[in-house]
Length: 176
Image (cartoon, rainbow, N blue to C red):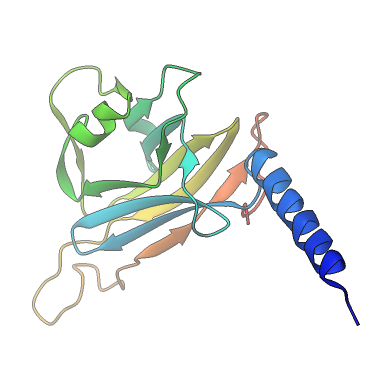
């Protein structure tokens, strides 16, 4: 039989382990990219439910390797936690008001008021969290034609998981 003191000690030990794991960098972090119609959601989570501190978000066109959008958190002391970023296929505001309020700044595009995510193209989404870059692939399907098929008859993909890359750029697999 287990005493109340032993149960309390075990709970305390488990709590300390959980807090230690959460404070040791980007362990158990996932970055998911989900697309629902024209809406694109970039979700950052630790242990599946807790938001994390994001330092940079970059979208690169896969074919040309050109950065089309990048926002950064320039203040290293700021610890604003952001759980999700919302974009759209087509025109997007250069810096949505919500991200401006969180202290983010745009580094790409350096001019203009918007950027575009084009249908039928593939992008790489990079998210920097505590010195580790997480990469996800985003395939924006062609616009649908009659019959519910995409223009090139490929099924529309809707959810992608991240791979982590450490500070030196080596692929580290999924960050779960």
